[in-house]
Length: 256
Image (cartoon, rainbow, N blue to C red; front, top):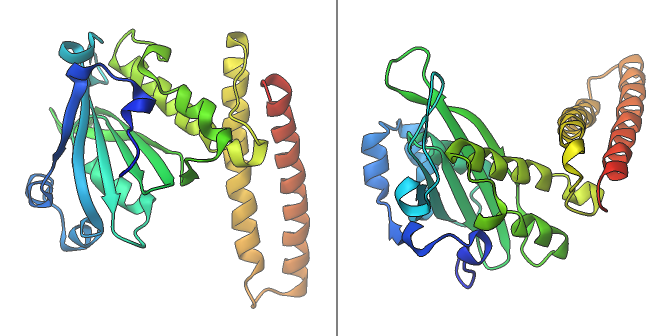
């Protein structure tokens, strides 16, 4: 992102910074064995840079090696897109190209998006790694002060450093919480004893928000009968009420 220094957000030690080294798309195409369709998605990337590597030698955060994980490092990438490219589609592809957990920083002059992928050992292929989960902020305005606490939460010294998995999951949690900023009007934070409750409420809110949008789309079908349309209208009203109640519960336990 030109004109914006992402390390003002992450505050990583100098040893972790990679100097924005450009990653050739031809290398990704070859190493990840991308299909022709996937290469067309990659073509929407104007530039992909290696921003930082978080590992024991650069940050003193311990690696994780157990039955499910083998995390020796976390790659932080910076990605510039061609005009009109969609963050989510490109993120899914770029995450897939790396065996390491990856954090992708998208952005232009004002708008940004952060996408994060955790990895686990493949159950089907020994020695291989697969994506376990992906969290994304969606697009947000860097000038929107409601996101300032979210960006502050990503600072290196504010994140737990027990090991790389704990560090990564803490970023993923902050990214997940950032998605409710537009509806709440603030970045939710709460007392430590309320973390589990907040996590459950945010998960429930994600499901309800998705169901609301799906129901709205279904109501646009011109082939619906009057009876079907009425049922969908009632369903939507019920879902929106439950969504509102869940949002209110989140607000109650957070520092709004």
